[in-house]
Each structure stands twice: as structure tokens, then as C-alpha cells.
Image 1 (cartoon, rainbow, N blue to C red):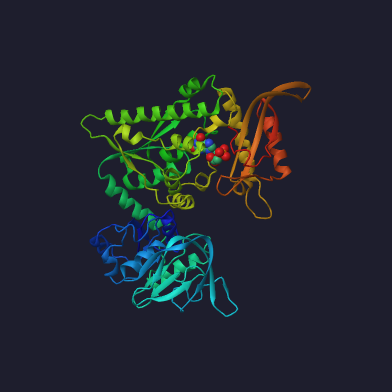
Image 2: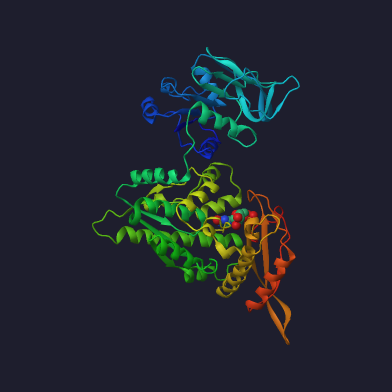
Length: 531
Ligand code: XMP
């Protein structure tokens, strides 16, 4: 296994992800762990991350001395390389030429780490790498025993190596995808230089996570707010695997879920997994409080507040209803790594709203509970893979995202039960047809080819004709987008035949809707949701 020491870089988790991708187990720990910790961990290799710090300003940002004493290979990345240089007798200086972004690095000195790894060659036959750099300081003198491994025009020592000891430093970031050969470099380091076998799989992660959860929780009880979304579902399945009936899931049905969603969630968790799930039907409360409210932000706030209230009440009941018992001690959440970054990074107005809903902010303190977040270090696609390994159905794990406020932001203006019922049925038809329609070119369904697709209820009536009669009914808009990050999105060019089928099915099968439109707006300027 590999030990990653974190000096506070934004992208340390990406190093872990790349190492897991080449099937090697790794753990991230803060850079100030003790020497004994490093020895007891017994890594086959160590990676030192980047940092915002500066080696001559932040004297406490050092690798523990044991790193240099246990005789295993070490890779220093960016700041990690600088501290390696500073601690082993080299020099680091502030450079007046800061480098940020794309750079071309020339491989030097034929090292094992870079041998044969290149993007192109110079006319003189030097291997060149296209990399991503982000630094102000740089190494200006090699420590004893080291040789030059790479350089750029403005950073003469962009890489260094002491092959005898297996110490390597790179000023660029191999963990980001902009460094095209980054994966190859990290694979070379962990497989060949550290000698890790590369047979670790997500199934092993389950076993390790189960052990960690058991250690953290002991004999205490845990509650988890199950929403039916991917993250909370995978967290629930994982924690249930670890502690069984010590986990109680609370599933709040706010009446704004998709067709049959609540039953499906119950069937999966209570039925198949035999987990303890408390289903709380709060739909009347939600609809009552939403009556007459038109403003989207106000609707979001109401839904978020009620959700927290209902959940809190259930948690208090669980704590109180067991005389003599110590009661629930942990609140589990399906926080994943991108949520962790989001909460530390710049927040848009919307991001704050999103957070305040699904992160139930402040709840653990109010309830006097400790947090249990077993997915904190995983990326979305890893969470999905984990879900499949845990036996959750693929359709659940590879589902499009669904906003916390649910249909509440897909019914424009005032939310009414009648509208929600109509929308649920129209939406289910759309999703069913997307799943059934296979694109001949890729062989994938249009559901998988789109990132998010749903129906929106428009509370306006238009005239139509059906049989011999005139109708005067509501309108539904279909929305389907393709995006990689949900920050920008294109409307999906769905086949006309598919749209035609969806439209005629909705109009024929959902009495009360007589017109279907397709939303052809991109984000920006439009958002993905209509509210
Ligand atoms: P927009 O509409 O801003 O949506 O383009 C971007 C993504 O965020 C989801 N979304 C929400 N998720 N609570 C959530 O949990 C919310 O209030 C919320 N609003 C939007 C939206 O579904 C899309 O995936």
C-alpha cells in the first residue's frame, strides 16, 4: 500500500484516485503525522502532495523524518518535491517567474521514472511531456545524490531523481488529466518502482471501509437520511454492510418524489437488504406549507426547512424512545469528495442553496451527533462502482441526479398535489421511453446518453382537440441535457421519433395534459431546472 502525505493541495484526492485506478490501495494522511505512524503504516512507497505553502515560510510543513528512514521510494509532487529538496540538503527559492497552467517539460538524464514516457520528441531526440504546472517557488539546487530529471524553459529543475534510494520529485502535477502522461508516470512509480502488485479492486475497498466504520462506530447506533439518490443509497448500503441493525435509515417522503420512487427505495433497502428503514410520509405537511407559495427560492427554503424539521423529529424520537439505552450517537451522510471541495471553495448563490438543503447543515451539532461520512474520499464514478459491488441495482446507481426539492422546482409556481400527480406520470413515460430507445450508432440508450432528463409542469392551459371534443388542459415541457459538470449544458438532440412517441403517449395516457413541448435552451443562459 501507498501512503499519501497531504500538504494541503486542492488536488491531493486526485492522487489517491489515480493510485486506486491502477489498482493499488492507498490512504491519505496529513503531513504532520508522527514518525511512528509512518513506520507502523509500513507503506511500499510514499507520495508527498502539493501545497499552497512555501518551504521557507511554513517550517512546520515538512515530511516526518521517518519518511527518509524507512527505505521506501518517495515521490514528491510540486511542494512535495520542494520539501524533499529542502529536507535532503538542496535549495528552494522564490522565483520571479511564476508558472501556472500548461507547460512543456523536457525529460533529462534517462531516469527509470520517465523512461519511454513522453508525448513527443524534439528534433534532437529528447522526450517531451505536456504537463500542468502551478507554482511560485522552485528547486534551485539539487540535494546531494540527486540528478536532474526534467526541466522547462523557466524552471531548470522541474524534476529530480535519486535512483539509488528511489526518490523522485516532479514540479508539475501528474495527478491532473491535463498532464497527459500523468497516469503512466504514477503507474510506473507505484507498480514498478514501489513494487505494488496492482490487484486491488473496489471489492477490497468495501472490506477496508467496513473495518473503518466498525472501528469508528463501535457499539453505538447510527441514523442516516436516505433520499433514494445515489450517494445516500450507497452510504446506507455500505454502513449496513458494516453494522447491520445498528443503522436506522430515515426516509422522508415529501410528496414531491418521482412515480413509485418511495416504494422502490423501501423495496430495495427494507425488502432486499433487510435494513431498518423508517418511512415518514410527510407529504401533507409539505403541500400544506407550500400552498400559495410561488417564488422558487422561497419554495426551496420551505422544503429544506421542513425536511430538516421532520428528520430532526425522527432523530429525537429515536434517541428518546429507548429508555436505558444510550441511543443514537452518529449521523451518517453520503458526502462525497466533490461536496467537500464545494463547501471549501467559492460558493455561488445557488451552491449555497443546494448545500443548505442536502447537506442538512448544522444538524449534527443541534442533535449532538457525530458525523459518519464513509464516502468522503470518493469521486462520483467510484461511488457508483462501489454501489454495484454492494449489490445495488445498476438502474439505481447510474440514475440521473434529482434535486433535493424534487418536483417542487419542476412544477412552476404554486405546488399542488394535482399538478404533482400529473407531472409524475408524464415524467415516468419520458424516462421509460428514453431507457427503451437505443441509439444505433453507440448502442447505448438515450437515458445513458443524456446527463439529466425530466418533465416540467407548466400551470397554463391551452386548447386542444381530442376525438370530437375540445380540450382545455395543461402543458408539459420535456428537458434533456448533456453535460459533464452540470455548470454548462447543451440540450440533447433527441431523435424526432423518440420525441413523437413520448409526446403521443403523454397526451393519450395522462388525462389533463394536452400539449407537450421540448426545451431547446442551453445552459447558460438557461439553467437545467426551470426554477
Ligand atoms: P441548474 O438548474 O442550476 O442545476 O442548472 C444544476 C444541477 O443542480 C441540480 N439542482 C439542485 N440540486 N437542490 C439540489 O440538491 C437544489 O435546490 C437544486 N437546484 C438544482 C439540478 O438538478 C442539476 O443537476
